[in-house]
Structure formats: structure tokens, C-alpha cells
Image (cartoon, rainbow, N blue to C red; front, side, top):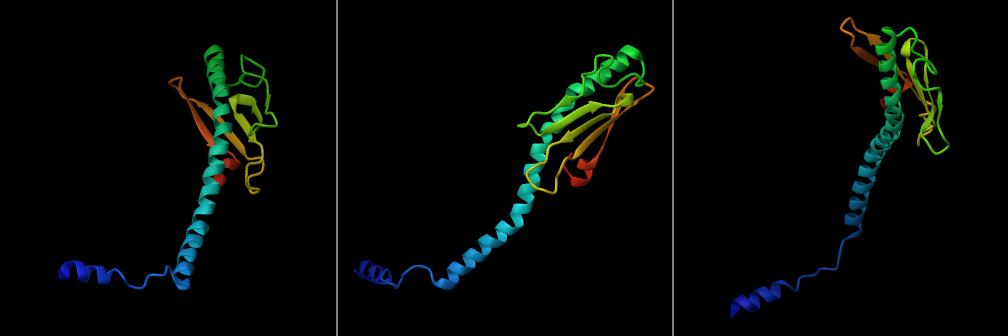
Length: 150
């Protein structure tokens, strides 16, 4: 008998919701997490957008490799020669502004402005080196390296 009566009396405690201080603490925690997470999210978003530029250089890398197979060196490998595509201009809806193969097979890709204003027209440079074994190694440089996007 006391089991039912005693437990039902305990449930009638005063419960009206959250106090103002509890709500302010929760709000402060949410604001802190948002402040810490937002810059990281923006950087990840910019890296994902710049990935389009990196991926667009792959056909040019393949064309430079074909040029090396055909000619035996990197000297004649540039845009519009030895099967390497002409300078590519990006569209208004693309992240790519331009991709070009300069002398000795160096690929330079320029990006359109990304989401944040600090990443204006970043460049992605791939410099080939022909090893004695015939293998091509690529060195990445450009302003995207400093920005941490490539």
C-alpha cells in the first residue's frame, strides 16, 4: 500500500521548465560551438570547391605524359602542341578560370574566386620532372599551397 502511495507523492514535485540561467548557459554553449566550427567549415567548403580545379588538370597531365612518350622529353610539351589541348577557359558557372600548359609541360590552373573573399584567383601549378627511368613526377606549387587548398 505504501509503495503506490509513496511513489505517487514523489512525482508531484515542482517542475515548471528551465530557468533563465539554464537557457542562457545552453545558448552560450551553442554560440561557442558555432564560433569554433564556422571557420573550419568554410575552409572545408573552399577545399571541396578547389577540388574541381585539381581534377580538371588530370587530362592535361595525361596529355603531357603522351607528349613525353612521343617526343622523349618535356621540351616540346606545351598547349596546342604534341596532342596537348589548347588553353582552356572556364565557364561562368565553373570554378576554373583557365588551364594552360606552359613550356616544358608545366601546367598552370587558375581558379575563379571561391566562396570566401580571401581566396581570389588561386593558382595550382604542376611541374613535371622526367626521371631517368622514364617516369614523370609532379611537383605541386602555387598560391593554393599557401592557402591550404591543394
